[in-house]
Image 1 (spheres, rainbow, N blue to C red):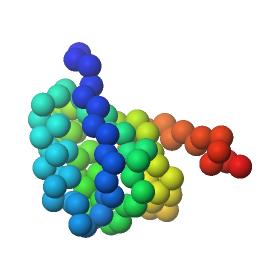
Image 2 (image 1 turned 45 degrees about the vertical axis):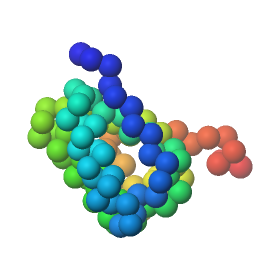
Image 3 (image 1 turned 120 degrees about the horizontal axis):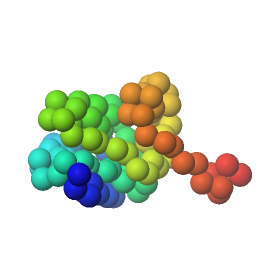
Image 4 (image 1 turned 45 degrees about the horizontal axis):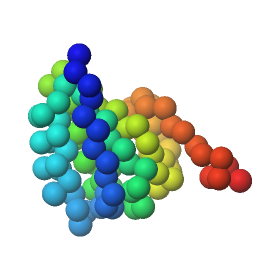
Length: 101
């Protein structure tokens, strides 16, 4: 198996960026057997961003590829928890020490 491709997202996962990010996610998935999304820098996520993550996860499964979220920002973590979707993605969620304080 090839080394997963890592994609770090620094912009908001919102409706304002959804179309550009969709193209970026689909292209990255097409170029790799596995895709790792680093979402540690995502300051905001809305339902469009959540739908984009769901779409990418389903597309990866359809293609027999793996999508993993390797780092969750607090905003991403809160949204996944609120929507009860953490288990759907199945990725370990790390909470840093400064976030626990």
